[in-house]
Length: 576
Image (tube, rainbow, N blue to C red):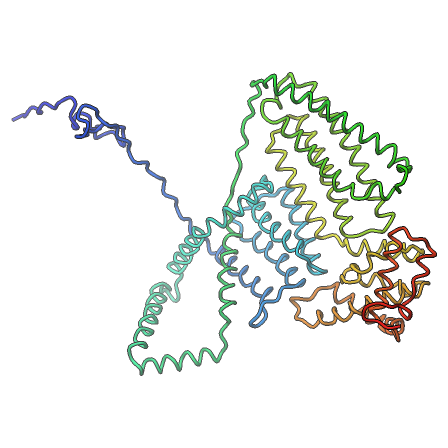
């Protein structure tokens, strides 16, 4: 017997219900509050489940090795020690582990450059590390781990990947747990799986602890066992905590997250607005006039060597290098912003492009004037670490102007420019971190003081307090002016005492430069003692400071020679 289906009202919920064969189809359901207005039904969004990929045995072993290497490099007994040899050991061994643990790696120029820079960081750390060296080393280490797997990531993507890796550490812990569980389940001892052994033992220990709280006999027995274990020697809580941090860092380093920025497709057919074209043309015309006037001013007073009346060449160029670097940096920003979006691809911007190239050319001329100002300062009072920073900073700005010109010529995106400029900044920072800037500065200044100049003496106070440059000052102990000899000897005696205290540490805090400098100062110890015998060291250094002050304030040679020596110096803490 066949039954006919019952009639269904056209506006009922059954009539509007989705077909059984349709999945998650949009449906309208009957709402009793509005019987004549069916409300739309939005099906729930089904999120794709993220599959946790268990870590391989190689990755787990690599994370354990990295944690052990960090512990060996940073911990000694119950306290942490961070120094040159420890950092060199860390920066030279961890990249090797990351390389061999990677599932597959890609050969690239970026990977080779990062390997060379990491080797330079490790060498510099062994010689004499500083904060910049350590910071650059950590950044390069993560960039190296990224470059093994993806050779096209720039500093922007690397930094974003680092923050993304921190955010995904819980997922990495889950993957490590899954990997350990799979490994223990598949590992067998004499045909028996390890997991059925480990889990019961762990649960049994938990219940033993609970029974110890309930029964004094069990408590005394457990206490005896714990005392026996404690007699062996347990690590401090801080060290156990750092083990956990080292393990998390190793998991993020060996399985980093990737953050790639999608390159937008440029709309070359979109035309720029007439107002934008007019703003760009007028801006570049006016700024070219301003830069031309300033370059002409420099040509008249700076390059000719004839400063304005009442000023010396050094006074005219004083503090100008920093602000000119700011002006050149603004140049790169303005050109980048002007040629961003439709203006970068519009065919009507030919005149604006030519004006921009002329302005960039004037920027290069202005950068030569900035180099000239720094050279004047160096010629006047010597070289310093800060002036080397200025040279590197101006060079970075010049590279940025070249990248901006390349962007405008090849119609590159603003993201392309930011990527390459940040990479250039990172490379400059690493070069500064590994370069012996204090040694170079002291070498130049000592040569000039030996030849009879007094103005570079102003840098002796800072360079005598750095292990990298202190031994370079030893030739000044034979200077013809006994005030220079006594002042430098007093400064080196103080540094010798400080280095002797620093050298009484373990191998982790040691470095090559400190040991070599202390050996050189100890070898010159008899001469240092002879030079400072019978004089007040504070008075000798005060005389040296007065000489540098008078010399750099434009004092004549007669005024410098009129300054008394340490024996006749009257000042705070000294007697006649």
